[in-house]
Image (tube, rainbow, N blue to C red; front, side):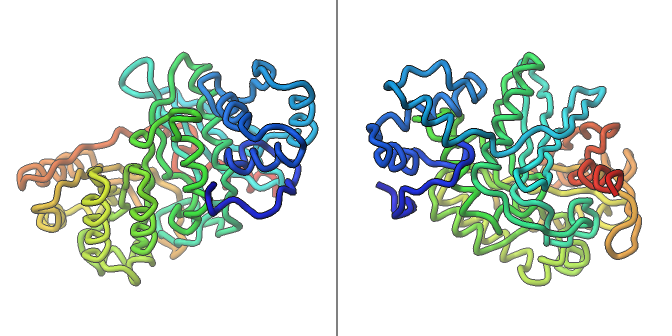
Length: 364
C-alpha cells in the first residue's frame, strides 16, 4: 500500500473526489466492508459516465447508503458559466469554503473533441505582471479533490456539448509546482488506467519555471507532458515580466526541462505570450531559436488577452497580427518548431482569472 496513505481511517465528510483508492479502501475496511470495492467505486465516480452516477454501481448491501451519508457533497459546485461564440466555456467553480476558481473547456479542431484547462490554486503568488490571476493575490492551495472536481465538471460540459474531453492542462489559476503534492494526487486519480483511464499523455503540467518542482515531477515518473511558461529568451526581460525569473535563470529552467524530457521521453512545450514591444522583436525570436538549438522542444506562441492595468501599473497590448506572423516565421526560419495557438473566448473574459476578478468586483 502506498506510503502516502494516512495512518488513520477517520474521514472528514466531503467528496469521493478527495480520496485515493487506498484511502477509500481504508475507510471501507473501518466500516466493515471489503476494501477491494474501492476501485470499483472510484472507477464509477471518475469513469466515462462523467462522474457522480453512484446509483449505477453494484455494491454490497448498505455500502451505497454509507457512501451517501459520509460523502454527501461534491468538492466544488458550478457558480457561473460563460460560453463564447467559438464554443469555449469558462466555468467558475465554488469550493466548500466559498472561494472560487476557474476552469475552461476549449473545442478542438476535431468536432468531437475538447481540451480542458484546470487550476491548481485559489489565486496565485507568482506576480507575473501581465496575468489577471495574480492581481487578486494568493489565497490557498486547492485540495486534490477540488482539482479532480474540475476535471469532472469539464467532462460533463464536454458531453453536454457533444464532445469528448481528450486533454487537460494545468495552466489555469496558480502555479502547479507550488501545490505539486495535491496536483500529483489528482493526476494519479484522473490518469490511472485502473480508474478513469484518461491516460498520462493527455495531461500537461505547466510551470513558470520552478526548477525543484520540475525535478520532483520527473521523480514522480508519471509520464505526463511538461510545459514551460518562458515568455522571454533573456533573463532581464523575463525577470521583468515574471518575478520568478530572478530566482531561476532561463538556462537553468531549460536544463531542468532537458532532464525531464530525457527521463520521460515527452517533448517539452515552450509557452510564449507575445506582448507588443516587450518580447516580440525579431532579434528576440532569433535569441529564442538559439536557446532551443539542439533541443527537441516545441514553441507554442500565444497572442496576449488584455487584462487592464497590471500590478506594476502597466498596460500591455497583444502583438499585431503582422508582428506575430513575422515572429513565427523568424523562429521557423532558424529551425525552431513553432505554432501559433488560436485565441479562445475573447468575448467571455477568457484570460485566466478575469471571470473570477469580475465576479468579485460585482459582489463588492
